[in-house]
Image (cartoon, rainbow, N blue to C red; front, side):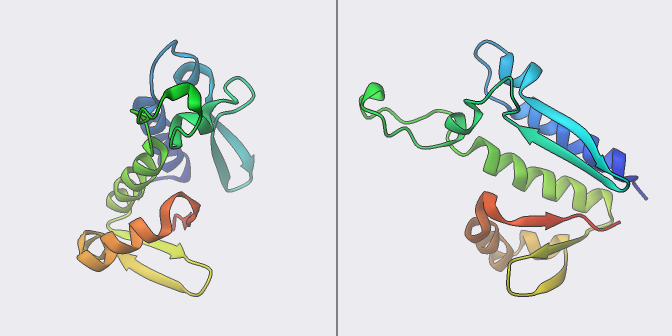
Length: 133
């Protein structure tokens, strides 16, 4: 069974790997892993050194971009989905999700199903994933 630290490291490393790269600041200084409690780690994207991180994930609406599409649009959302799948595999397919309505034990095959894929899209980045070990 994977340790909580190993699961946290998986998320941290994947976000760093998937971060858009221009100057390297976001990847090198804007993604952090911190022990925030006895059994708790927090991966932060943006951190004080890269407060612009949120804009790397969003649709470009400013006239500055002349209608161009953000090439990194939704990179955080996609990385979260990847991490959920990776961690589910590390936990033998077991993860729990909370959607504000109910708690359900879900297995990896659920996320691969059409219903699971629809839920991933529905939940987006705002879903709270509780990793169960």
